[in-house]
Image (cartoon, rainbow, N blue to C red; front, top):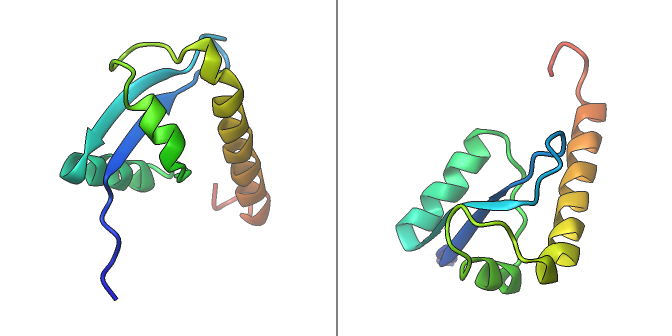
Length: 97
């Protein structure tokens, strides 16, 4: 079976400590999308697949904040990522972090 090609990817940055709005920090199609995802994986960043959200976010200019209309959806994704990160940290021993 052929592996599904990555069509689009968007990376967002949210600095909880600064309290700023999430921003688009990378976006791309095809090979660039694959590199965005590979880079995120190498950095230990959780990947959330949501083609509809990627479609919306990919229309936002690089460096721009996410529009307030998308806050709820992005907040749900971020909440999921935080949950996954916490579960992962709990499973790891103190010396593995």
